[in-house]
Length: 209
Image (cartoon, rainbow, N blue to C red):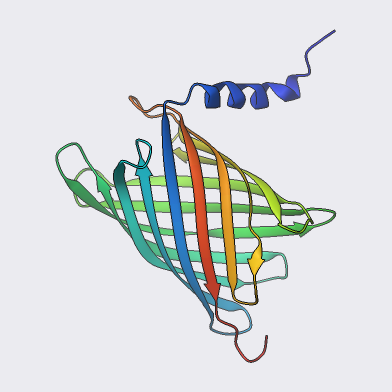
């Protein structure tokens, strides 16, 4: 019997996860404010740790603007300032990005996002990066989801990120997200890592909601 080729990527991802040597955390906090019926402004912050919570290696903050062009199509733009641990000292990067988000609702909700990023580094050369993510959210009480994201530089895979989690709403304003998975790093010297992802999001409601 022939092995179904469509299961090869799943098999490779599972093997890579078993070979992970580290545990990372990625922790997001966001506050969103509706500016108009179509425009939303988001204040974003993130902290990342590695080495089983012993190494704080990245912090970032910035702003995101979402503009709903069509019911299923959203334009995305933003800017982050990132401080990241380097071998000798921390280094800063300014990250400008823009792209689109698509949402399709059937029995499950499919969310697709493509972003182009320009990284302006204080030390080292600047570079472009492309992010492509697909997320499937099931219509169940805790909104369980599965997501896959690929980050690529010019003709080179940077990393792959695979998560499964839940993102229930807590009342009218809060949403909590908890997920686990693994990240595959393609850069020399980097090893796959297990990841715990958390996010707390607070959304103000305008009077038209």
